Image (cartoon, rainbow, N blue to C red; front, side, top):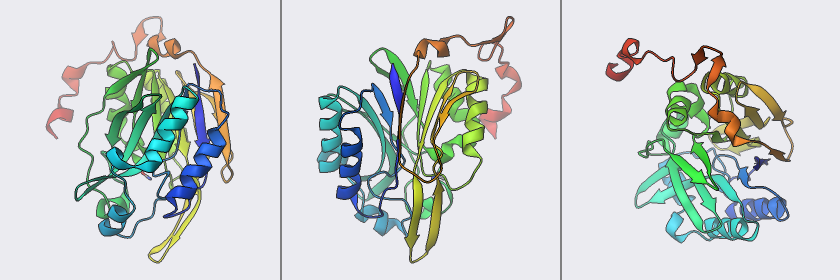
Length: 266
Ligand code: ACM
């Protein structure tokens, strides 16, 4: 399978331009799966919930998501794209899995980062695995990386590739994802934006360095910090099915959940 990411710098509040930028970049791409950043259509640094609602999109009625679905159809590929999702008066920091026939799944970010708590409703969708062309993919968004439980519940459901749209401002995620891929023996594609959102309430600079990591923690590619990057590589998703870390240790089968029961109660 040919999989990778497109790293770019979304402009705040300019969904038409951001969408067009994605479409131009991926117009001739030869890939099965491309991961895009978090909030790739709207930009990131909202000042409050009324502003995030203003820039959010109802997936049933979004010309931008429709254009990305056309792109997926034309190029016979799947996209994972972060967007601000409007559902009535609720607004979620979401990721859509879009295939040649349209939206296949929407994941709503469960762990909101910092001031996102004032702009979004907490995600209410479970972590599930989607089958695309026989490959099992799981989605998480950016700050979900801090919670190892997320990758683990996706791996336990058979996820072979973790897709992680991101707008990272802290510097630890890229290295941490190597560990997530060691302890779960999965692939992970982190698509991070770069550039700065300059807003009245302050500025946030994003770290780029999108990456693809193989099961066992091998870094297949990491992009530069502050420039556009389209990267696609051939991977064999079945490499994620071998969960043995030594001849006698499986990262999933050696777990002793009876010793982790505190996790269920605290
Ligand atoms: C983040 O979750 N966007 C840091």
